Image 1 (spheres, rainbow over the protein chains, first blue to last red):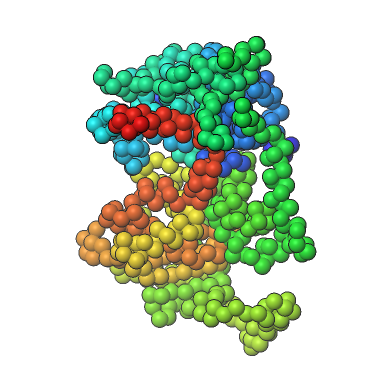
Image 2 (cartoon, rainbow over the protein chains, first blue to last red):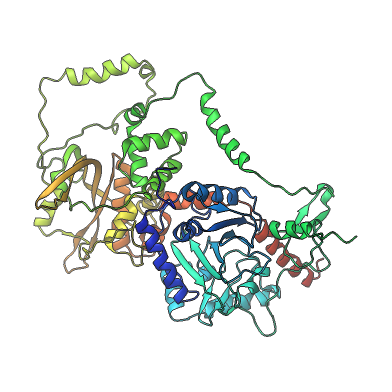
Length: 281
Length: 355
């Protein structure tokens, strides 16, 4: 890999992406178009997040990558392998040590600090795509804060199902201005975005968009007074490995159909066990 | 407890890759050289260069070997390589009237100035498997006999007049040339509505099958373009850049296919005229050039009611690297989002009293 530039992308590309990131930070929740480059990862496999990582990373950085909360999933391992090869930087699984965390579908359970940046891989940057297929239209709707269709679709869910049907990718209002897709994180993670200490950057490579939630910015899930937003219900359940009942759990189907639950955040779970946490029986 | 956390290590990724490459070495035949791939599968190499938007025959051949002939993967390999290269300069606009053609046909007139030049083409060949070609010598003898039997070879003129020019002179055509501004879609995000140069660039590196599907839908009935191929050219274009000390310098040549199709009547600017669509792509790929020209026309002159006439619809879905990647990403684990959906479904069902 010596023949490639530090961070793979040419310097011109990295500069463009950094400028677009600055714009995104200046306008929280607004999708900034950028000239997404091809990286050696399939589109849809984190190319937007990866381009942000490659544009920001410096020799002193320590990178963590997770997929579904797991440091050891194939995609996360692959991203770390690639970034190591083109930068030589250290990678870690320890959330506390990382300066950059690239993630797919989760926010770590442990609260992040001001000096950490969380980089989300985004498949669908457009929260209004559900209600309007056309990009030209959705851009207009954002510009005019014309969000009636979105509210209507939530209302229709109430009427039909007595519940909002959106699982992950729950739409949020950022800085009381833009409706934003928080990427397919579970609803469990949505409150972690609100007034967070760390910078959140979102990269959609295929759809060629970058957006951001800067530190200390309000992020409110769309909700009705009489139908409040609710996160996934794990009441009465706990991690079978570390005993946690305060983390997002993966449901595991065992032989015979029995269900067990374990932490989705593998680093959090491992650290709890190392510090002596056990399953209450 | 039966559950064991699935942790995959680095080795698994590498082993999976090694296993893939093992498949090719199972048989007895040795690997073809890049020259062999570039020579025997030149249409394939051309297609990869076009969709990969990098004119590099040897690299395209390498990509094909590496991906075991997967066109989408191969184009992607070229694109990813392209990302590492700085854009040093832009070549000057090229007048395709100066193309060194190897093939040039028109369906609009029986004959035209400069003549119909069939050139290398399988258009009229009978699609019969030719088992004689299995013998390499037969193949070479056959090809040689075509050339050696000729009494004289008339050189093709260096610039052939364009049929469209003749129609232009008569004021019979209307073209979409109002917007001549230039955007580079590899350096600037596509903004909608896209400028013509961005439309043509997007189509030119679109996936052949994708272009074909959309253009065919229009020709067949979801649209109303009955394209008359005004002119189809295959040949070589010299590319020049400005020399820092004045003048220009030729930096190489590229093989391209160019199609100008004459489509529906329009009376957009007063009197009824023919509208024109334009297609140009790297390499020899006539299907792609024609479909591109049809879509170029449909996007601008169409009603906007059919998918192939909707600029956004066409441009957002025609890229093979984008669409192939996204379709495959569904293989990645989605258990967190699924858990979230499961939670909703259970809740809805319990409210319905079904649990």
